[in-house]
Length: 197
Image (cartoon, rainbow, N blue to C red; front, top):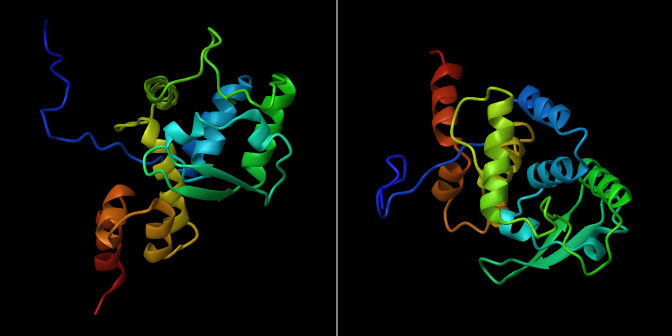
């Protein structure tokens, strides 16, 4: 068997990036406008801090009646902890649009493949890469891009504190959160540029 030359070495990690520019987020939304499933997956992913594995475990019944400001409760696959997620207007609206276009029973997963199977994390990874490629976005993107985009814009746009983000992402240290969101180098560079003595 030939080894993929792009595959990372054992014990190394591949770091994916957030989508940093609002114009790129808008471009992807426009690209997905005619595909309610993909639009919902993208919008829900960038408006919550859910991992792809948890997004894919959402059922129609969990979100069917959700309005902006409503909470959903779920058990995280990775940690086993209960999480409460508040849906904003964008997330709630795209969920309802998906359910109108595809009325699913309450116990049905929200996101299906074209073959009628539940989407997988590798499928989400491929989708995110293809969306970013389609708008000529340079960088390394994958399923974690959705979650990282949420955190990045929480910090950069809303100035959400690092301790709050640590709690949201269930991280053990501020450094872990800054590294995860690809923020630290930007903030350090900005600190140098802002101060002129």
